[in-house]
Image 1 (cartoon, helix red, strand yellow):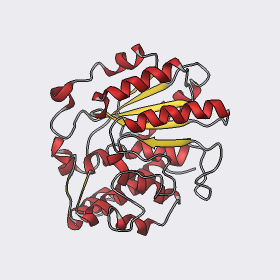
Image 2 (tube, rainbow, N blue to C red):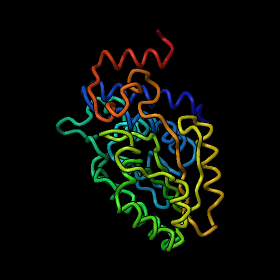
Image 3 (cartoon, rainbow, N blue to C red):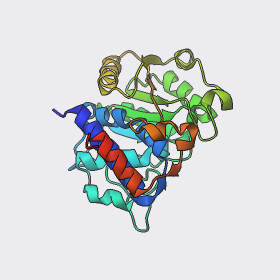
Length: 274
C-alpha cells in the first residue's frame, strides 16, 4: 500500500523540478491532475513497471497530452525509468518529449497531443480490449478546453453505442484554458448533463485535487463495470494546484516560464521546508 498524499507530493515536486530545469512548460494543467495520476498508477491500475507491455494490463491514455511532464513524474516514481531521466524533458535525444509518445517512453500507452485524438484512441483501445476479452480497464484523461473539440463527442457517442463499460474517462475540469476561462471561450456546462445525455455513467468529484475523493470515485466507476455504459468522472480541479503563485496566474499558467530557483522554492514549500 502506498501513502497517496506522499505520492502526490513526490509527483508534484518532480513535475516542478523537470519543468523548472527546462525553464518553461505546461505547468498549470500538469499540477491539476497529480492526484488522479497518483490514484491510477499507485492504487487502481493493474500494471507492472518491469513489464510495460504486459498482456491484459490496464492502460492510461492522457489525451490532454500537454500534461506529459506530470505523467512522466508518475511513471518515474512508479519505477518505469530512473527519476534522473526527468531532467532531460524535451531536450535532444530524450525519451521524454513535451507531449506523450508511446514510441519513446516506457509506460506510455498512446501518443497524444492533438486535442481530441487521444480520447478517440482510448475508445478504440477499449473496444479492442472488449473483443480480446483480456479483462483490462482503459482509463483516459481529457481537458475541459479539449472538450470543445467535436471529436470528443463523436467518440463519446461511439463508446456508448458499443457499451464500452471497460472505459473510465476523466475530465480535468479546472475551468481554464490557454486564452481565458472555458466559460468565456466556449462554455461546456452543464458538463454532467451532457455526458449523461450521451449515454455515459457520470460521477462528479467535488474536489479533484483530493486524492481520497478521487480514489473513491475510481472505485465507484470500477464497480459500474458490467452495466453496459462507459463512465465519465468529472474532476473539479484547480489549475496549478499546490503552488499559490502559479494558481494565481489563472489562464496564464497554461504554459509559462518556471526557473529552477522558482521550482526549488515551490518544492521546499510543498515539503514544508520553508
